[in-house]
Image (tube, rainbow, N blue to C red):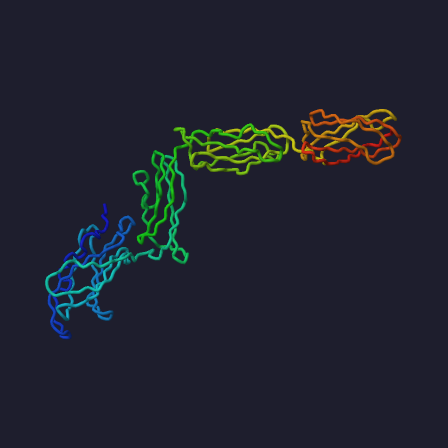
Length: 434
């Protein structure tokens, strides 16, 4: 197995002769001598390159006295499995003690992964303690400012696998195409995510977070819920309601998706639908079960009075049915009908007037309770109308007794609900004699 790069080990531990084999410099104020330098790169925060699929294999060391005076540039390849790396270089010191700038790079894949620079005091003689050089990540994706994972808020059943995706943007919101991430979860004993972002669910309920992280510490995460395979769609409430045609029922239809352990199952799409058109509808055709396994929606009754049916389905589970009864609505002047038992009557004879009450959709009212008054308007005949009889089934009758011969162009009625609001309606009837 490939080990991660040993940042904890001393890079160039003792670096024998980094400034060794020094020569006299005629331009300097005094001769130098053999010098030794140990350096140790420090990464903060610590980065496991192997987790990002990166393999460092090269160290580059550059020693300068000034930007225009490079004393030594050295590139050394090493075994990535090395536990310690030693480098040796020689330069010319102008004095026994000099301050030189040391630039250090860890490279892999043809580019610098980490780099750091520090001015170090170099003294002729035996080496002192290691001098630390802070290095930072300089590889692809250093400009990443934000990560976005997909899909979000995932739900997996026992044993399922899901591959997550990640995209990146810089501080200006522009996409970053080349970058590295490492994948992990909040509990690796429950859910493991491989280097390609593939996660496989365990055989137990769980809620964990999947995370992606760049070498520079930019992180995004999303919750993953692991659930058992559901086995039952249970009716909870809402069946057997009564309501007015064309209006929403008072209570929602509510179901619960259950697992073999008797607990609810989250994240299961439940489809509600009306079993016949007739204007019936549900507010949401598909509802996803909540954390306790519940899903609900509000239903609107169709325009035909009588029994109406609805159902809920989830996956391949048996459907759950809901029944409801649609009742006729308020009396409508436009659809209600007034009839008479005779088109003409003799003076003193009686005809019966009948109101067949209907709602706006033409449904017959099947209950009484409304105050109805008949009257005659127009024409030249006269007559008297007796008291109205409420038959309790949506029909109302009253006797008409002819008095003066002539014609009456229409029967008129007045109705008043229990709220005592009154309305007037005229209905033409065939001409008749009195």
